[in-house]
Amino acid sequence: FEVETADDRKAVLKHLSDAMIQKITTSSGEIWPKLIDLVFEFLEEKNLMAYMVQADEQAFVKNLGYTGEMREFEGDYLHISDNNFGGRKTDMFMTQQVDQSLTRLENGTWRKKVSIKYYNPQKYDNWVSAVYRDFVRLYVPKGSKLVSVTGTNHIWSKPNQSSKKVQNPSGWTEFGKTVFGAFFKVEPQKEHTLTFTYDLPEGVVGAGEYELLMQKQSGTNIGLVEIKIDGNIESFDLTTDMEITLPVGE
Image 1 (cartoon, rainbow, N blue to C red):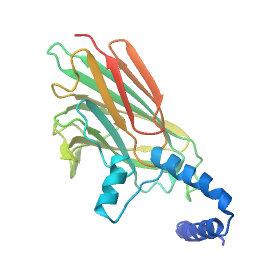
Image 2: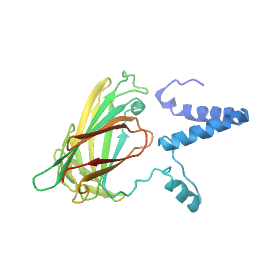
Image 3: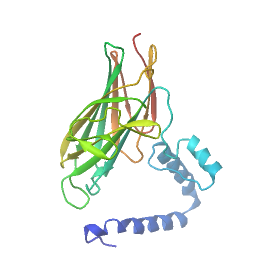
């Protein structure tokens, strides 16, 4: 099977999946333990999601964290949702690094800054690689207030309307979370940093303790994540959903 035009690129999937199914069903039973281990590895790393027709079976895999739902959490929460618009398949090459910091204001409010560094390593070919156009949404604790967004001229603080400046600090609500959005571009072989600054609602940071749940978007390549608060630093690779706890001053 040969791919001749850009329109043929999705047709590869059918031929590839058919070949994989044939390979698996005609292979020796010795490979099945390895395949099962690989499936669970993909589920844990959120590169594969499960859906069951039966409600009780769906509830079971949901409790295991294999269905992709956003979880409820009493502390701080962060989910970064990237959406590739018209950038061919550039998202499979993109890499990300996320830096987070928290500062306590004089009135007691905790102000959070989330900086996302995107890197587009691939040369332009207009087939699978092109300019990366990303509509990104941050899902944060309900009641958070957006202060600013840098690295973009298109800010979404309302679900169906963008602007140059923050027009609605409260954002909008989805899945029990407050949502802020932005649209930006990354040229091939270039870096771009997008930064959201927002105030967390009262009670998210506990007395003497900061807890964060960061949920990974399925199929993404976010690498290093760093969190700074009161001189304490926590770093990890976001290969799956992560919960962390750090001490904070009274």
